[in-house]
Image (cartoon, rainbow, N blue to C red; front, side, top):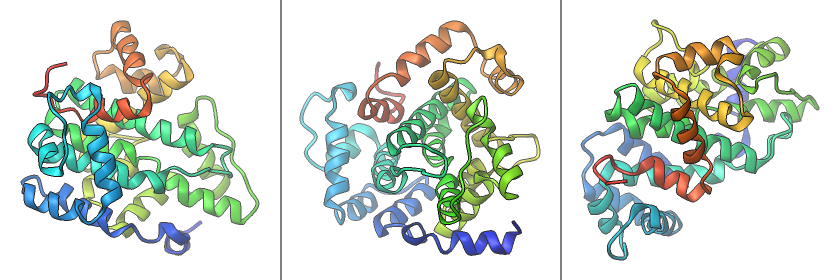
Length: 286
């Protein structure tokens, strides 16, 4: 499928064609590393459901708040602006990302769970790679790294087609290209650009299956590539040496068995705690 046709596909995928206003505004805040608390409050207070979800997460036992967090400003003081915006973006994307992918045979629960696990693992990988300053960006990019599957699935369903996952699952992009002439990374990058995502998130979506020295925003891409692989390793109980791509990707993480076992524990939590764990500021004691 050529690029103009893929562009038409991206712009005609129904409710995916536009993002909710609040999510768009949060994207602008994510682009601004110095966004003020007042800007965050102004955006979130226009979305009571999002605010309620963020406050619920902020009051989770994992954050260890010493008093009830009852307002967005309280959450900002406890967690910091970047963590709150990241939490809000995740809750805002949940209705978009939690959907069945019939063309792939993936349930909404499985797709959302993998997205959250990959986001968490991407944040952990950023730390492991010495990129702690990119932790929030890695979580956000990991959350949406497979968003192109929503576009591909719409095409598959409309044409009564299906794609089975390879072995292991992260080789699905090869299968997509063979069957369709494009894959979810290309579709996802185009959709993200259509939505107005920051360029670093677009790069992570486009290159998370093939990070190399020449790709833009390589540090973030490396973290998300590793996060995606780590999530698959845990989900499928893979051995690191079972696949060249897995072994090569994880080599830069100074991988050891203890690291994997700890990661399995980190990713085995319920989804609410997984989200809290990944966005917890480094300054907060574990």
